[in-house]
Image (tube, rainbow, N blue to C red):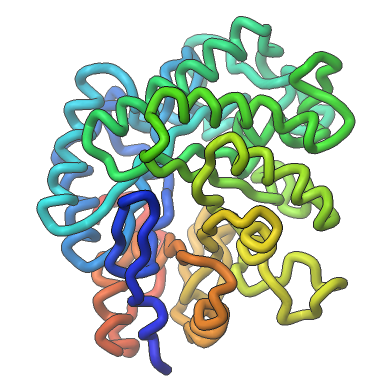
Length: 368
């Protein structure tokens, strides 16, 4: 198996990557009082030194009262947190790597037994269809949240990061606006169509673009599935997907990070068959934007098992190579495999497949 296609360079608005492999953002929740320190510096530096093309950090939260659902999730605002993140960026750059923070608001989701000390917020006071939790956001809340996303994006640029990613997936705040089951609003922030319900995200993109300028790469992570419902679909047709995603590209998104549980599954098999384009492939075709694909790369089970203590064994990269060779998408994000093995990229590059270790659930509790 030749992996050369994974090691082609890639450029986006002056962000020049050595290869097509991205470290996927993964919640670690190990920043005391929300402040990243030397453990985070070392964790990301190890991946940069081992030839990861682009590192997307764990989710980091914007400056809203209840923006995080676990106490150890790091802030991406405030002098202390930004000093820590600047150290992270500098360490990654010193090893020749590129890095972007993922900025986030967890909405009304739960992260465990911990509760923030203020009420959580969401479009309609719901965490899932028919399941109340927290407050319905006012127009003022919405405006302040949009401004907070823009503020964190500007902080990323000013701290020397190479790009910024907005988390709009997996049933968190932005995705709760997308989802008809959690957005029941009858004002300008809701509506019967996915295009109507995408206005909140589009306004975040516009505000970020105004704050960071035209040349700073902006990535938006999206998904059909939710942690509340793995089978949820926001776009059931290509027209709906265009209505959903194209406005973000027109507003200033440079790259769509299209999250699937299994990257090799076709998004619309009724159109192009069982080997058809995946989510990232269709997003690229419909919008013209660059895309990142993700979902169980190099592993034989999806991420769900990790939450109940299950590991995952290595599997062939043949399906990935085939899709990358036909330029179905531009970059591929690797999550659990890189979490357990900082040297995963080096081993793949050098053909040392027998040294790949798979994923061990115990590694979720470490920054190894």
